[in-house]
Length: 247
Image 1 (cartoon, one colour):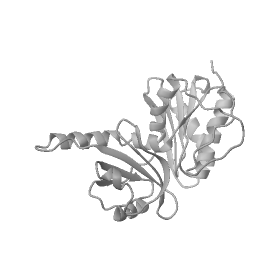
Image 2 (image 1 turned 90 degrees about the vertical axis):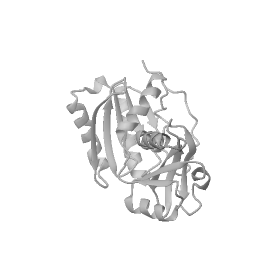
Image 3 (image 1 turned 30 degrees about the vertical axis):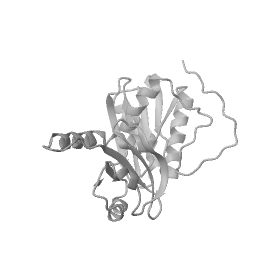
């Protein structure tokens, strides 16, 4: 079993997957500033729902950002504590990538729909999460439907020229965690290839899906030195040590 945690925004969610990638349980809380007091309760709820013991867990996966400083700090600290106590590996998953995974089926469906329409070639759809930062700034990235990066994670101030290159050749699905901010971005990015999708938020369910391959490849984080990507450059002078081998 892999337990997954996502706390990059105000949504706090915990999921449990088996090693084949099947979602067994998902519990989430949509309340501001409740991560610290509710996250461990969500973990217990997921385990109780599935009658899973802590000793059944093979790894902990956590959304590594970008996102809320406080939310990420709480999520990563909780994940590290569980891994240390249980002596199991930690898997870090980029939050923007996991969020975009939830939009893949929609993008593929829209692409197939245009392909079937008479006289139209198949249209490529890209995925672009817009995570709220300050004013018109967002944490963002762009992915294709195979989850390959087109634009790496970055902090960006949205203006009328944002994503101009990508929009010239593709349709892009934009989705955000703040509806007001998303609508503001829509008024600025006026390209007809820009499609804005409401009410699609990050979830631990996608964190767990992406964690399966990393688990199978033993692509684990160093517990001592792993830090979230807060959306800004993170500096450390500490020397990294080899990743612990888990049996």
